[in-house]
Image 1: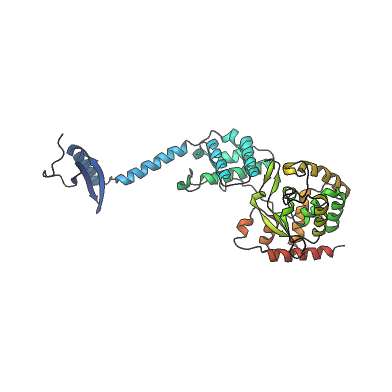
Image 2: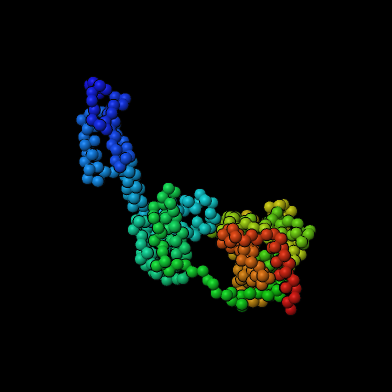
Length: 387
């Protein structure tokens, strides 16, 4: 079949290029390419249709048509994604981000128990505030309900991230119409705050090899898993009380049955209280092996450490002698309360405790090591003045 003749007069808007017919059309002063065609008949037909659309005001440039087709394909793909599909994508994302294994285990458990049995087969684009409210309302207990709310809120925010990053929703359906998980703003129960004398009595009531867990939890404001995760190399400058510090780099995580980074990746360095240092030095000499990675509290648990269940048993016996019903975690609340009473800023408190919002707060206020030492010294002085 002979190719198009370059000498043959062609309609305006059609030209010959590489043996094929190129079609163009000017609309509102802008040229739009309508494609390449093998025959003049096809080219003329396309041009005629486009001119008719231009005359009627319905012309849509091919590039815009392709964009609309891509958006339609994306919408159809998004419509096919169920809450179960989204949950797996989100959990994989958290894993890739390096989130703590315990966090992922908790979210997965919440999804399995409370969310997926109700919404698992529902298309993500069909999830409404009403569906979410109904799901949360049907969870009878407050703590699981709050956990489910947090998981849903975070997962749906992930679904509403920008489209170019894989988002499938324009906005999250977890809106103001939902009763969002509440963070308690009430004051800490004063009965759950231990004095210096009570901490000392609780320390004395513990078995000698575990006594140090109490002042570490109180005056260093450590979580239980962080206390048990400590090892010899985490301490520095112990020969100088003005420089002594502890590095919080791991925790015993019973959910993951492993050592993991501290909760919310809250690695931090803390000045050691003078009410901890002599007890620590004695403990290191009497109970800890010489190796740098030797556990501070050796036992048969994760990483050769005392297990949380073993510590809990002896703690319950000790507290009943001094402060019945007092939780081990209340030691941490006690320490942070005494620390706050020395005029610590919010950023300094968040740094000391390794709280969830530390990374946000420290964008605006930096908790320096020098300020941490000063506040620790002031707390020590105040404790010395208690009777």
